[in-house]
Image (cartoon, rainbow, N blue to C red; front, side, top):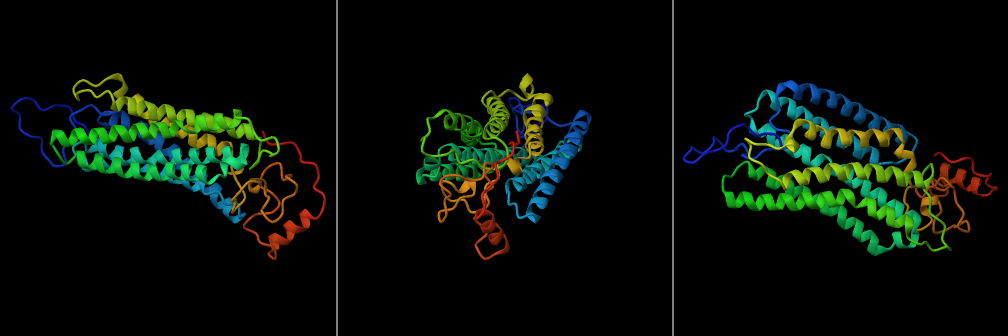
Length: 352
């Protein structure tokens, strides 16, 4: 959202050259210029490259250990989308009249963050299933979470379509409708970014069935996972709320507000997202939020399956001795069965 150019059409003036046309309202971040945008974008670019390398390295190491954790790939993909957006912005700073580059930059900025929303939404689902296994694995609840995930795809299509088309029309009626679609999509996504917070808090404070154990998963304490998810969701909600607030308060391109500044653009987009990327990497979310492969019901997060339930007792860290993806007869399966035939030692201290 950074392809505007100073100047606004006045009465009797000729239509702007195009299509595509430059927008006539102030955009978040303004028109990029070599100084300071190239420097800022270059620094952020280096951090996102390091973040992408970190999460892909973690994924490859885990994959060789048969430790499946697809969320590392999602954060790698998010970092790559941000790298593309920053590269586009650097190019646009040198070619400010190239609207096509501006369109591509807008799309990458708007679309990339959706991956983080999806990650946090799925983590909140795991928290619900851990605290309330019967409710969390209920078919209705599962369908509700799937609806939210698929709605993100629908909104992404809406945002891309309206964003691109808005650069190719001067019809004010059409632009107004596209603006309404963009405001709806932005508001929905802001709610989606915030949604893990009430979901997790409700799951923690809602009275549990005393007959059911908490279905712990991954390494570390469950309350640490809750705090980590609340922290990242709060940051993402702040960024999403700021962006939609800016869209609800349009200003002429000749009179931008403080919230259209470059500092606001970089801080409420890239800096916030960098914090989330590195917090998850440093906290080793690949270990904390990992669940056994093939988990399909209550008890599976603790490594229990429907054929053998150890009286509600399982591995305190949630990885379990029996991986759902390791059937009996395989090498891993034999090791799992031999371990289950002997008494487990008392669990050691948990990872905080």
